[in-house]
Length: 153
Length: 190
Image (cartoon, rainbow over all chains, first blue to last red; front, side, top):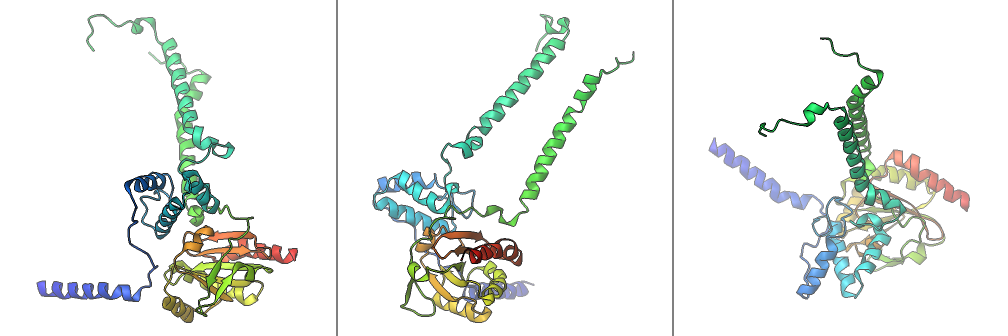
């Protein structure tokens, strides 16, 4: 039995070893970014967490492992070294990929719902609760509203 | 003792939780139906209606030759981003080939982040529908186009304005519904 398992394992390993040669792979530069100093690294990181990866759309540019995220990180670092400001870099990416890349899009008519929707929902919920509570308080008989003093809670 | 008879107002309120549940169910159902849309992750390109980026890129079949955006100006062209590493490119390949055979528009390949030999082999294996294949192996120029993967397909008009973009494979349905009407419109403008 263990010999059979050994043979199977050998076949699997051989298959894995051959696979990369057979499958075409996207050319990806796996080298991590190299920063000149801590300040540059910090600025880059602060910017990258603000930017949204266009491929895996629930990750930031800093977190994503997608090839395009890698390319865009390189591009952002390049732009930083060219002396562009954070705003300019964001505008650069928005011009190419749309406002989607910003985790905090600009406040304007098309994003009002996004910015103020949650607060609006909270207000509506609070108003509904207040309405229910007041209605019930009115419907309650007087005797129940005054519990006996000896009752322990 | 029998309970007091419900007033009409109270009985209406009794249905409120059910109505709230039905509304929530409808909302979730709509979400499920929307998520069936295969293109739901495709981003609208801000470049539509804007000039295509300037570029100068090497030609796949003629190493050393560069083709610039100015050389392609004057007539509309379709730009199809592909790579030998891209499985969905095989899905759209026969559809694009049939379109290219109609010769209604130049079909230009944009070979993204590929290996030269792999790209040539891919075209040999499946057939080359392209009038010209540009290569961008670093992916630097692709950022100017707002490209974030393959396949992606653009239509650029004779004035160099991007008129249409599709993210994902150009299936027969996309061809009939979206792409061909744009081609017809550009032909009418000329």
